[in-house]
Image 1 (cartoon, rainbow, N blue to C red):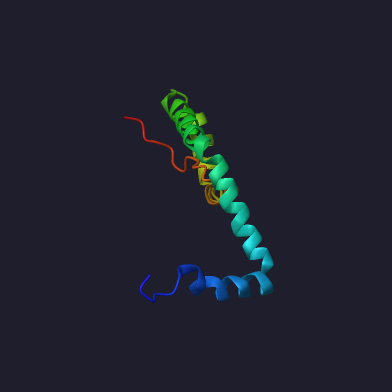
Image 2 (cartoon, helix red, strand yellow):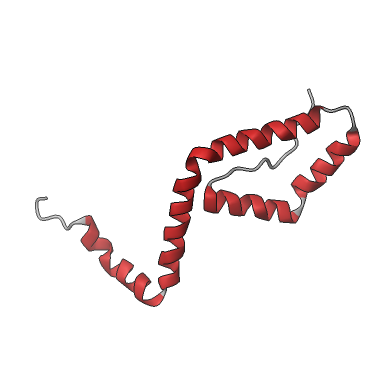
Length: 101
């Protein structure tokens, strides 16, 4: 490579330091990567299914179910769950209630 250092040699000291001092970080990143890879084939299907379910509730005539769904989608626990599933498994949960046309 014309005297250029290999990419693995550039990052090896950083990786060795992380593994020695913060081994849990390497383990966590490995697990997150593995889970995201494993869930990638189904994450789009799950997201589309949940989007359709939210749309079905939004299309109903009863405003009470819209209010319940809106409260759920805006709640803190749901936002934390959506962020965690997106980060770890690449599953996108609906975050807003689509407006009725």
